Length: 432
Image (cartoon, rainbow, N blue to C red; front, side, top):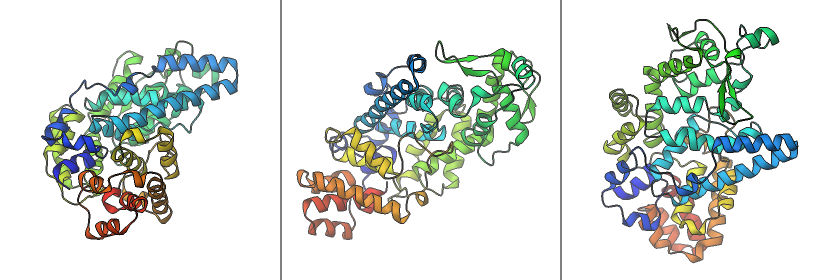
């Protein structure tokens, strides 16, 4: 690959034929996408807010269970189509990749319930997108207190045992959200917290629930656990109960383990499944100097040597592969429903991770015999439908990049539909 192709594959979503010609200053093109305030793709910006969606859900719930199910599925369909269209057409693919990456870190899965299914897209739009190049602490707060996350990890059911509601009803803590904030969203599995910290954070989170009538989130003081909470070795302090969450999440966001966890994730995603320690250390230094801002850390990767190695280190996940294929073939030829069916058939349905840990980013999760057979099936299906319509020589050299002798020879000997199948199934396309 030349530097332009590497930029499109490793930091972007795979090149579009017209896109590559405009990349003269590759690093400038990438760094320009990291500015705060870059507009979302229009198809994303046009979607309704969480408050609007929760009001629709409340109306549907009052009508009938069938109405709630139908409304939730219709909302999800609109959100999925918008996400596909944004992926295939965006002029800022690095930002889009960061949205995917952090949305996966702060997983909300549509498998949970109808309300979560309806709000998962709004969660990504409101709690992830605005913060992908800003301060991590802002994303942590927005994601923790979004209605979709409160529902997904059952915090609306969590009641302080010694609160007025707890004493009256006998209800108690639910620790799901607190545990995932510490283990998955913040410090990491080996980040230095223990069960006492999980319980303390769960107590801080009591009282935060949904306002089903007005939409959005509200703090219910009568359900909040009173008294002091000791989190990560220090008391939360004497602040109003509704502000304890800001102290707690600020402490988690500024913890050294959080810096290392997020920076390791970035290096693993953009460079290698086995993150080079010098790259992680460099990003941690940038993180500390920049008050936990994500954009400067990604810029350090863009300007550093690690992601520009000539060998493609990362296997594309199913979603990445299907999107890269759609971009290669030009977006107007890609049907959102076909994209979503393909991703589901490959084992990574959008916003449907099987657990709060999200989808794995390492190759070993996606290279089993059945998974590889599905990739070949996907390549064959696209080749059969579109192979005779395309300039494969132009796609191979200008978009995918230099091919190995074996791949080039196979393409030369193949019929057009078989050639496109071989190109999509090739190591050069499967990896970035």
